[in-house]
Amino acid sequence: MRWQVAEARANLTSLIDAALRGHPQEIVRRGKSLVVVVSAKDYKVFAKSRQSLDEMFHNSPLAAAFGKGQIPELRHKEPFRDISL
Image 1 (cartoon, rainbow, N blue to C red):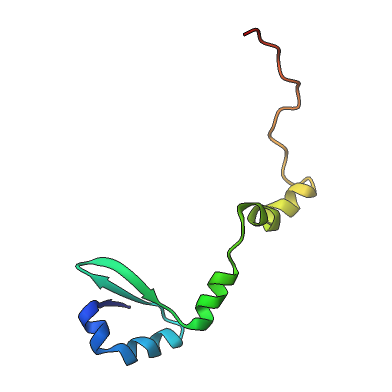
Image 2: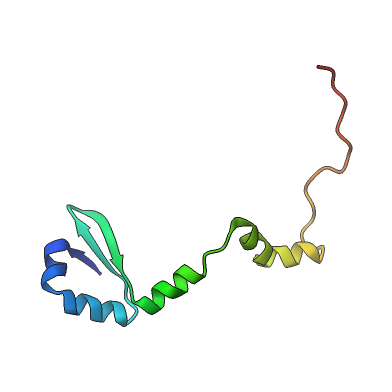
């Protein structure tokens, strides 16, 4: 749900209760999103799930399929050509 700052301040208990039920609460000012309130449990899951780009590619379902030969390699195997500079 979206709340204006003044509404959020006046209804803070309801806002927190909704976030605890698993519904992120967005607070906006002049139509622009400022913050999103989520439960500590949801935040910990989000913060823990951050991976480096290398880890993300390594853990991707495509990595396993590529390793099994189910996805063809697209790079050229020919050696580089010689050029004069």
